Structures are given as structure tokens and as C-alpha cells.
Image (cartoon, rainbow, N blue to C red; front, top):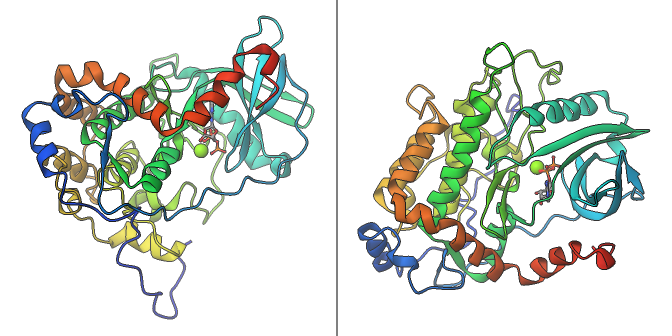
Length: 389
Ligand SMILES: Nc1ncnc2c1ncn2[C@@H]1O[C@H](COP(=O)(O)OP(=O)(O)O)[C@@H](O)[C@H]1O
Ligand SMILES: [Mg+2]
């Protein structure tokens, strides 16, 4: 990917912010440090949000959906009701189980990739892996199957939006996430990663699972405040049948670890770095490594500056900034050795009171940011309207 460079690289923009920061958040930050939940008290709607001046402008337009082939009528023992989202390699449909009417999410390999053996092998690896992962912060996989020409995974249906959607919505409104929300999201994703990293096979041998694609589009925030890690499509474990084609780096470039960029062998600390990048961006509402070209992004991951988040967002508590920067150590020997340790540190920072209210604060924020989406998804539950998606 990062082939030999013949001419000087294009000049990188100094930063690609979601928008500009503000000095007007310091007082709220002080309150947050003294009383972990104080900044939330009295704020009913959007309590996890801090307002920024001047307003930020979104830098990333929503991606156009991939080409949408005709929707299947049925997948295994499910009726297909409509399309939820189109991802990189797959399309997510709303489905209903014939037997009991339970609504599910059906992930289907994208039409134009359905004959790609590598993609299919990855897809079924994801399914088998996910079926082993049972954790409150990981999307629950129910079953997988292959109708003629259609490989699918049935999952619990999540109601909400991806964290990437939240970032975009905040950017469009000139808002940032409150540090307490950042800590809560980070702790729950870290819990999910720790669970995956610690999985063993039936004989008790470590599976060595690594997610490899920890980024905001693979974190789901429910309308009820739940945080779920999704999309283990690139996850890797010992003994996995599939090998990545030589020279192909997989995953979202701005969230890869330096060792992924260098194509070294990976361990769980690679996911820790991805989580660190995500948390840095949630703290500052700016891009850390994303640049206008892939080569510039790769270089930024490899050796670009990693400023203290507090230099850009002064209301980020010192302790939170220290956790984020520790996760972002390029030398993995100096990085957090496990996601579990990050979860413990973030939970300690939140305190018992902060943890107790965090989910309901996030739920408030989600409903405030996405009223139309909430309404649309509520209609899924009404049988008569379930086709209107
Ligand atoms: N179980 C689910 N319930 C509801 N929506 C989901 C579910 N899984 C995924 N999605 C939606 O589909 C999008 C793409 O899913 P993902 O698994 O990341 O696919 P891809 O591998 O194509 O990136 C997610 O960002 C999310 O918005
Ligand atoms: Mg994804």
C-alpha cells in the first residue's frame, strides 16, 4: 500500500477538523472534574453534548449508498422487510423471523461481491466468530446461512445510529460530545474488545481474536443509550482459514495502528490503538490521522503529530487525556497492554455516579440528535407499517 515514494508527498493539511474548538468549555470541565456528574444535572435533552462556538462545519458528507440490487424476499427463515444500511462489503436489511415474528438485522454480502471467495470466507468467519461472542456491548449474532447466491448473518436488531452518524450530526450542529459521554462510550467499547480478546476455544486455548477495524462506524449507539461494538468482518484469530491477500491493508486507514500500516503481526494492542484514535477524535471533534489522500493518511498514522487533546479541547479532563494518549503510544510496548485496563481506568474516572446515569444521558442525546430516525425506526415495530423503511 505504502509503496516507494518517487516524488515528495502532497502537502498535508495542518488538520481536518470536524470544526473549530472553543475556550468556552473550561468552566464546565472544572465542574465535571470536581463532581463527575455535575455537568449533566439539570440538562434533560442532549445532556451528553457540549456546545461549541463558533459552530463547526461538517467536513464529511454522508457517503452515497452502494449500488442497491433488488432486495431479496426471504433469507433463510426470515422475511426481508427493507434496507437499513449499506456498508463497505455488505448490505444490512430489516428482517422478520417467520416462526415468531421477531425482528432481526440481516447482513448480506454485497451483490457485486457475492462470488468473491475471499469475501465470502471472511463473511462466514465473521459469523462463526460472532456466535462465540456473547457480551452486552457486542451485537448478538443469532445465526448465519446461505440462500442460493446470498450469504447472510442474522443479528439482534439494534435501534439507534452509528457513532460516525453521531459525529457528523454533532459537527453539523457545532456541538461536541461531553467528556463524560466520551469516557462512557470508550469504557464500553473497551469492555467489548476485552471480551473478544479473551475468548478461548472449547479446550480453553486463547482464540487470539483481534477486531482490526475499531472505528466510529463500527460502534453503535442505541436510542436506549446502549453501546455496541459491531462488524467483526475483518476480525482475525489464530487458525482462521482466510489469509489477507498480500499487500492489501484492510480496515479504515485513519484508525489503523502503526503496526497494521507496517503489516507486522498484530495482537490485541492494535485494537487499543484504534480505540485511542476514536477517543481522541471524540474528545476534540477533529480528525487525528485522516488526510486528503491515502498516502498522507498512512504517513500520519505512522509518524504524524498526536497532540494532547486538551490543547484542542481544554475541557477534557487531564486524566481522560492521559488515558487517550497512553492508548495512542506508537510503540506498542509502551501502550496499554489490554483494553480491559482502559475500561477500568475510564470507569474509575466516571465514578459510580457517572456510570449509573451515563446510559440514560446518551439515550437523551440520541433522541435529541435523531428525532426523524427514531420515528422511522419506531415504525419498524408496527407490523402494518413494517414495510415502510
Ligand atoms: N444489528 C444491527 N442492527 C441495526 N443496524 C445495524 C446492525 N448492524 C449494522 N447495522 C447498521 O449497518 C451499518 C453497517 O454495518 P457493518 O456491520 O459495519 O457493515 P460493513 O461490514 O459493511 O461495514 C452500521 O453502521 C449500522 O448503521
Ligand atoms: Mg462496518
